[in-house]
Image (cartoon, rainbow, N blue to C red; front, top):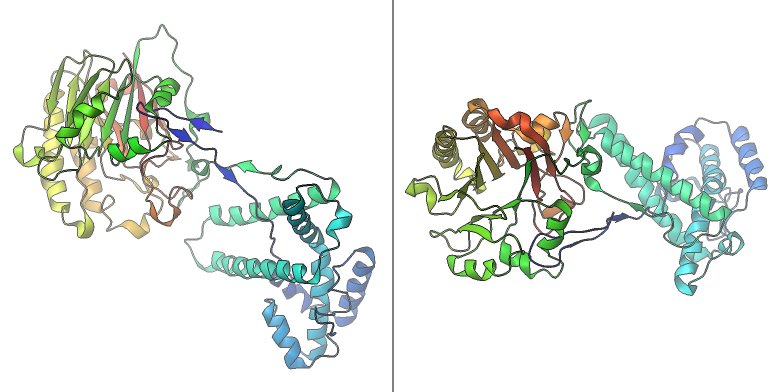
Length: 504
């Protein structure tokens, strides 16, 4: 799926994510537990019969010759053990057992994975000559090339064996990990067999990879499923149904985002046709706002910005709308909280809309107390006061993964900002228990969907994220929510946009 997304400012291209199935397939150690228990006579006859039915690489024969030309029978016990250990094979038993194991490795195992070696050779020749290579040509693999392939395969095998052991001892190894390994092996076998039966162009077997559609969680429950916006979003409302479409995005620096050649708000607006876009962490200074306004999308002339004055180039929120609001407010009305530009409120005919950026508790949880005992209660009181006149929608980066389903690794982040028990309890006490509804969780009670992925350790690539961005609505309008969604395919920030469709 190749999305070119417009967000309203400049070319924003979301490239297609392609997963390339690796050519290497593990062999070896997993099957040698069987060979050690087989009798020498049975093993030898089995190896010879298989040898007569298959074509072996030049340097490998059923009699156990290694790539230096020496045979297993002519080696000492120590030499046999050394060479078997080098390919990740158990080395217990007498010399006869070691010879049998050696023969087993170079007959049955290489025979079983011959197609993978042939596919490796075929791919290399195609890369050099730019043409298809037949199975017959693939068999002419040189000794040096085969040795390289076998070295890579054995390396993969050792890692896979270690992972297999971990699945029996480490409770944090999930079904997701094991399933991924098994899927990779199955796909590689399938690809090798397909390429040896008929000549195919390169990259034919590439598949589109959408990480968010794979369940990624360290402690998944049996009824949890991954979020897939392509299948879980309801059909759009009919044109005659009055509604409003709101979106929110922590852009992690708007000026930096606008400099990206691939960034454009236009296509996101065309794709989602939103009425209002809320931004957080714009990191703008007041002197930047007018220039930014000149670059807004046509039709979204109503924009309202607040910037940090206590720390320049920090925090900052905004609301950009094609619907003129009734009124606009900045902050919560308390000077101690309003110097960082964390809140913009627009009043519309049917509701109040707040774009909020809740303070992060910071490294070492230095601001944890301020966040949970001062900021959260003040914001809660503010929205409850607004609610006396009309329903309220609070959106933005609320900097809290409320439940374990909302974070990839709950056990490892119990004292991390955004997932401490203090922050989670404050989120619940100040908002959820006071009548505000988490619209995404209401619509998707058992769905794992993230809105933030750290830049380190391939968080987004592996979908190891947090759900920190929300649309909270007054309970009185919760049943009017048609859709509460996440757009994980939109890059450009460490957060992705979220959206809400509300019937009016």
